[in-house]
Amino acid sequence: MALAAARRLSSSTSAAAAVAAPKLSSILRYPRSRSPPPKLSSIFRDPKPRSPLPPGSRPRPRPKPREPWEEEAGALLRRLHEGRYLPDPDLSSAPHAVSPDVVKAAAERFGHDNQVVAKWLSGSDLKKLALFGCPTVERRTVFASKRLRAFFNIQEDKICSSCKLRSSCNFVNQEVTRHNKVILSDTMRIISLLVLDACPKELQVTAELKASICKLLKDTINLSNS
Image 1 (tube, rainbow, N blue to C red):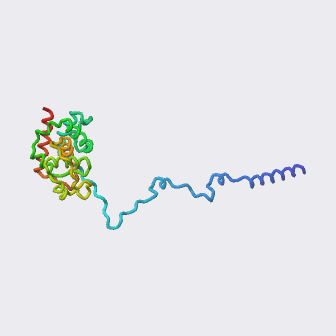
Image 2 (cartoon, rainbow, N blue to C red):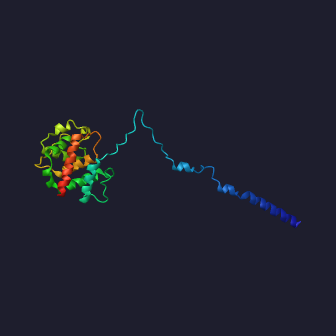
């Protein structure tokens, strides 16, 4: 009789434990109040889709690749590299790969060191370069062009009135002090941008002007080596 009572007590204790103990699956699964984990694809996709272009608008055109004057640009880069105005490597065979800003700064330093060469350059070719106007609206280059025009007594309104960059320039018709010499650093800054084809596409270099620029550059390089 005692044995039967012990068996009943054991079975009732086991049943109570089974009711009280939670199932393993209920411990591991997410509570109902939580959302399921996000999918991997949702982590990497852009949460904010790009808005479409406004009706009637067009995507901005890509800027045209530069087309440096191979022979002249190569000669300029070689001379600047030889004079240590440009660091290694020598990129005279790949002028499209260099930064125009770096080259124009180097060309300006070269011109400053070789100012004596300016007095031997062709006045008629320099005047053609002056009449071309500014190859960019960047401040230092604009004033370099203005000083060259001032040397030849070319009025600013004559050039600015027909300039295709006028609407984006902050120095329209602004005069500068005239110097009694051609400043070679100014000239080299202008020429470097032209031979590297680093000017806005609105500007067109005629065959006549190109011939003058090529002659000025060639003479400058030759005279600086003598």
